[in-house]
Amino acid sequence: MKESNKINFIKPVYTDNKKIRLFEKYDVFLLPSFSENFGISILESLARGLPVLTTTNTPWANIKAFNAGWIIKSNLKYLKSTLIKIFKSSDNDFYIKSRNAIKLSKKYSWNTISKLYIDAYRQLLN
Image (tube, rainbow, N blue to C red; front, side, top):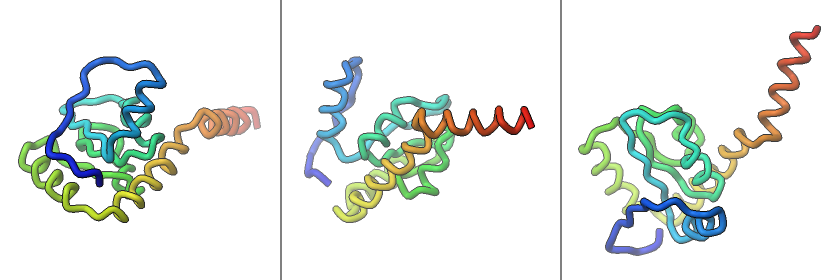
């Protein structure tokens, strides 16, 4: 994990190239939420190899199953304790989570999704 004594909060909207460069600067993506839909920012982060910390109020429970990040309850206590764990994580743990993040993101590629739709339509026609 890159050593840093500060946490940066990202507010502006970025172009694709700026966003890619921004993702490359960080080790983890945090999106705590009380109610989030699919969360395209989560998918974009996973695709760039960033492990994700998000909450149980998102439809991303498979992040934990894939070992691609952390899923916590929407609670400051859980956020704080998980951040402490993250800061103490080894470089190898980040490497594994990063690799798994990319694998998980591929489940949502247009190629994968289109095959699912084609298979569903074929089943309907049979």
